[in-house]
Image (cartoon, rainbow, N blue to C red):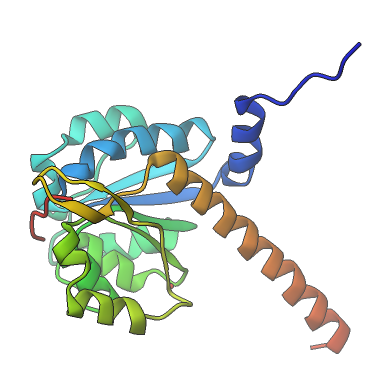
Length: 220
């Protein structure tokens, strides 16, 4: 008998096995690429992750809360869910093992990498202690803007991980970098980041034992 060749299903299982039972917050901002979030959330859910979606107000113009609620099996969270007496942003940050923003507009990117917080998504980011994964989605001129690139250069590498963006044709007709990466590429990057962190944790434990001792609407 000849050995069975490994199919795409085997590769997929290998990539996402470390996401099983992880609590993942998916932040969605006001980009036309928000429609890809439905596929992304579906893939994360199929991988066995627990999903909570946090949407900015502008993102609801591109994809409905009901769609994402039906896929994630959880209530979608927006600014209206929080009031002056609630601590929803803290609850979200404490619940999450992984924080992913996909798509992330230029406005949200500049805001959270600068430590600013004025809505449920950005305040939750500020309260989250782990690394935040960001999948940018914006016009090429916005991605190449000096201020965006400056924030990209000086942001904390311990707090943020950038996924993409990809090169291609945009909805506005421009061509260049700024397209949100595919859900498959985001899933793979997320899985690799989890694996890296788990390996770092193992190394840290070993060393310690031996030594005895982290909206505007853009077309992207």
